[in-house]
Structure formats: C-alpha cells, structure tokens
Image (cartoon, rainbow, N blue to C red):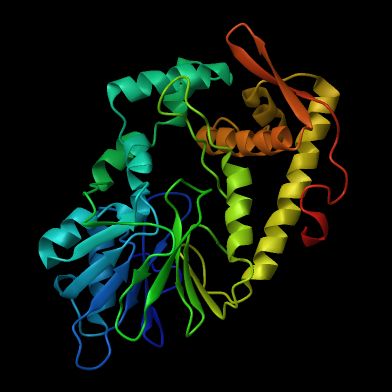
Length: 346
C-alpha cells in the first residue's frame, strides 16, 4: 500500500487510498460507516483489481473493525479501471450489490474493446493524424488493464437525481458527464458533503477523455464542453466538504472550478495562437506543438486534451474543420477574446 495520503476518518466517512499503477498515483476509495446498531457498510469506488490494492482496502477497513466481507453496497462514480477494477471480487466475497450509472457500459466497452471496436477506433484516429503505430502506442496501457480490471454487471443502474438510501446519510446521484459519459458525484445535502469522483480533483485540471462514436456515422460528444455544463450544474450547491478520487479532501469547489476555467481559457488561447501561426493542422500536429516533449509518451491523454479544446473552439465558432484526404484539419477563424467563453467566472 503506497498510502500517499493515508487512511483518514472524517466523521462517518473514511478515506482508504490504494495504488493504481498509473501516473495519477493512488485512488481514494471511501467508506461510509454504518450508524450504531446497523450493518449497512457502504463503499464508494474500489481501486484496481490487483492484490496490492485488495490488501490496501482490507487493511484500511481493518483499522475500523471491518473486512471486505462486511460491505453491503458498492457505489461507482464511473467505470474506469481504478474505480471499478475489483468490483467483481468484492461482490463475490461480500455478496454486496454494485450500483453505477446507466451509461457505464460505454466506458467498459472502450477499456476492453472487441476486435471490431478496435478496428473502428483505428479508422477514427487515423483521421486525427495517428497511424497504426501511434495507435498501438496510445493504447499500450490496455495490456495492463486486462490484468487489473474485471468489471461486472451492476445490480442497479442509476440515473440523474436518484436517491440512495444510506441510513441517516441519504445520497443524491448527480450525473456529471465530461470526464466520461457515466461520471456521477454523490451528494449528501444535510451534511453538505460531496463524493466527486474524477469530476473535481484538487491537483489535476479536467481530464475529458476522447469520445469515439459507436458507429462511423454516430454523433461524437464534445467532452470538454459537456464537462463545463456538468461543472456549472453543481456550482450552486452549498458544499462544505469534497471527497475526490485523487488528492486530498478540500472545501471550496467554486474556487476550484473557477481555476479550471482560467486554465482552460489559457489553453484555448494557446491552441488558437498555434493555428494562427501554422495554419490548418490535424489534432496530432496541434498536440505536437502544444506538448513538444510529452506528446508521444502520453499520446492518449494528449489527443484527448487537444480534441477537447478544439471541440470547444468549434462550439464557439472560433475554428472550422476541413477534410484533406483521410485527414481532419482545424483552421482558425478568430482568436478568443479575454473571458469570452467563461465570462467573469473565468
């Protein structure tokens, strides 16, 4: 157990970190302890499906007199490996129910694609500038995922607004897509506590993963634009404490979102200046100019980041697209003005 932050109790909430094997570091699973006389032990997110992560979860629960076998309900913020990876094992051992958002299969199918899905991804990414060798590099992490990710069919599929009956700690499900289609946060209005998953992270700006449609003619979600629609949705909540999946517990979600918007504004301007200087570019070429040292080593993250910002510029009519052979290129129409997209909030 790497324990970057360590196990810590916040009233009925316990944070248990476990290692992921990814550059993001540990993931925080959260336990909602049952009130006296109750056996309803609730876990939010699982860690990856490794023995090390399992041992970390067992050790964290053990500090409070519990075992994995005592878990009665497992809630998922979303379906990524570090949140869902050992759900199957937890359910087999404890007999708990597993609940996650109704769109969770969209992410699971992307993480463990069929041969047909992979062929479709290659065609799609080729238009963005990635040849087969770069595709293989971008998705090299999948060989690791296959070892630490055993998703299971949820017992209940949640929708926006669904209430979850935790004794004296009822949670509201708030759908916040952007990072991925099924991302939710769980909100406890009486105590003003929020479990934010990967939607709000104190040390990481929004990571909105590239959406590839299920069919060649399918509509593609503009994930970064969608993310800020979700962020604005939770902005009015009077949050006292936020429990993120990575990083330390924090309090001011409005300040964090304002900082996100400022960072995004700056990146939008930087990409606009790249297009202004170099003319029409593929997303890969934009990524190479934007991250000249890191683009190849973190190719999947880079292409997701670039596409998110290009999509936002497209949504605000600041760029246009053009087809050149098999390649999709973006051409600048105008440079965004200060605060034009987010206004005073940025």
